[in-house]
Structure formats: structure tokens, C-alpha cells
Image (cartoon, rainbow, N blue to C red; front, side, top):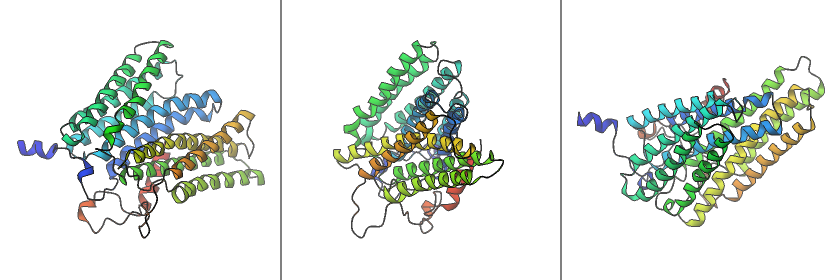
Length: 375
């Protein structure tokens, strides 16, 4: 029996102490897809309500989804949690993400939003359990304690808000969100001792970005479906929309080198890392709102129904462009003769890496975009 328990739940270890290069695993990609599906569900009302009010509602709910995803991703990149207990916790988290998505289409003052907040609280409490488990790693204990206390305090407020009607509910949301945002800032000085993996986390962000770019293409395709007859203006709008998404792929991966290594050996590098991480919030918001706007543009034959829609579309493109500029500015200088960090080597030579994704990963990316679009 002790051997079975040891196999199910081996002691966690800090990945910072591991010299082996780390790749994104299939389980991590599967987990990411559940969050992308939730983002798509939260964005679905924008198809009929592409207005400032609709975008504001989407932004608020999206921020919670992204914060939950980035929190779990930061934990996974610091530790080595791919064991039986972690897989069961991942299953529970994916179910909770589905519960969030199921409560994501109602108004902010509705019963649905209360369910969304409750599901988010349970998801964050699961992360607390993971950090409490990681407290056994002595080198990272100050970090894990700081995170588990801050996340737990905020999660309890999110959970309590589900029992309180609006608008008092929104006051608790504000306090809980402030605690959530403050927790990594308070724990910042511990991050140098227990840094995230400099290559693994950027790869997770890069894959998430790629899947969202695929979602933008799916939105454009939905707009193309609405075309009964193809006029030159409609064809130009469709081609230009796909070219715009292609352009953001080019800017992010080739110009800004978003998935490049992000070391956090010094306080200055930690600050750059945080700027890089938070810039992705604006990028992801921009890409989703841009995709829905392009769907409207293509669906109406190259013209938007209202001026507000044109402003939202232009604002989304500007926000995504500004975020890419920030990401590029935070990039670490490349050393002469060193291969690009995003050109990941093949793992076939190392049997220990066979459970992870391969270097080129073309099939993985196609599958990821296809699964994410199936809603």
C-alpha cells in the first residue's frame, strides 16, 4: 500500500532545481483547451451584442478566466506535479471551468454571474490545495505560503459574493479582485528564489495565443457563412480579415518572439517577466474582440452596422498591437550563436520526453484549433 501511495503522489519538486529542458505536456495542452472553450463561451454573446456594454461584460468575465488559467499555469511551471493526485485535481479544475462557462452568458446582475463567481472560487481553492501540497518543498515554502494565503482569502470572498444579490455583490468582487491582484505583488521578492521555468511558461503562453488566433479565424469563417452572394467588397473583407489575423501571428511569433525564454534571475528580470505576462491579457482581449468584430464585418459584406462597432474593432486591433509591442520590449537579448528559444528541439532522442509535445508540433496546433472551435 505505501508503494501505491508513493506512485500516486510522489513528493513535489521545484523545477528550478532540475537542469532538464521542460516541454509542454499533452495534459497541459488539454487543460488549456478547456479554458479556451470557456473564453469562447464567454465571448458568444458578443455575436449579438457587439457594443461597449457587451465588450465590458466580456472583459470582466474574461479577466477571471485568464487569472485562473495563469495562476494554475504558474504553479505547474514551478513544480513537477504530473502525478495521480495532480491529474485528479486537473480533472476537477476542468469540470469547474466548464461550470464557469455554463454560467457565462447571463447579465452581471443575474443568477448566472453568481454561479460564475462560485465556480471561480472553487477553482481557486483547488489551486490553494496545490500550493499547500507544494509547501513541502522547503526552498519555495515562503512563496507557496504567500500564494496560498492570498488566493484563499480572495476565493472565500468570491464564494461569499455568490450568496449576495447585486449590487452589493460587485463590492465583494472588487475587494476579492484586489486581493487576487495584490498576492503576486506581495510575493514578488520570493519569486527570485522559486522562479517559473524560463522556457516552459512562455511556451504555454505561445500555445494559448496560437489557439486564440485559431478562434479568430473560426469567427471569420462564421461571417463568411452569412454571405449569400460574394461581392468584391465581401471577398476583400474576408481576405483582409484573415490577413489581419495572419499578421498578428507574424508579429507575435516572429517579430516580438512572444514564446522566447523569460529568465527571472534578478529583480529587473522579474519586473520584465510580469510586464510580459500581463501584456498577454490585453493581447488576448484584443484578439477575441477583434475576431468577433471581423465576423460582423465579413458577415455584412465589408461594412459594419454601427459606428460603435467600427470603434470597437479598431480599438481591439490597437490593443492587440500595443500588447505585442510591450511583449517585444520585454524580450531578453539573444546571445550570439544561440538558437531561438521558440525553435524547440525534437524530443524523440530522449525517451523521458516522449509524453510531451514534439518540437514542430504541427498536428498538435491543428488539433488544438479544431477542438477549440467546436462549440
